[in-house]
Amino acid sequence: MTYAFTFEVPIDPATYARIKEVLGSEKPPGLVAHLVHRTPGGLRYTDVWESEAHWRSFAGERLHPVVDRVVTAALGFRPPEPVVEHLEMVDAWIGD
Image (tube, rainbow, N blue to C red):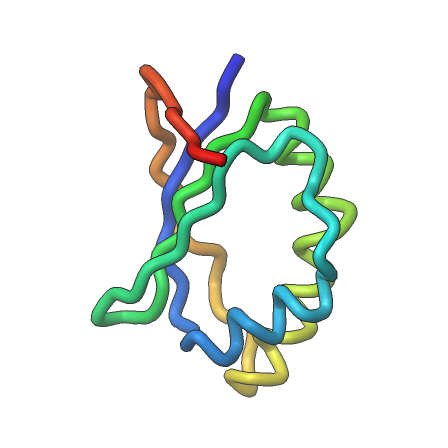
C-alpha cells in the first residue's frame, strides 16, 4: 500500500544539500516521489513511497544516521523529531 507523509524541518537549503551529498545519488528502493520546498520555518518535505516498509528501511539504514550527524553539526544541537502528517494518497502521477 502506498505510504505518504509530510513534515517541516528547521534547516536551510545548504544543510539539505549536504544531507543529499552524504546520502549519495542512489535512489532508495520504493521511493515514488520526494518533494522539498521552503517555508518560513525551514523546509517542508513531502514523500510518497511504495510502502511504509520501504520508508522505514531507508530511514533507519541510510537517512537517520546521516541526518543526525549533518543537522546536529549545522545547528549545534539535535532538534526534536518533526511532527509527521500522514497523507491518505489517492494518486501519484509522476512524469519522466
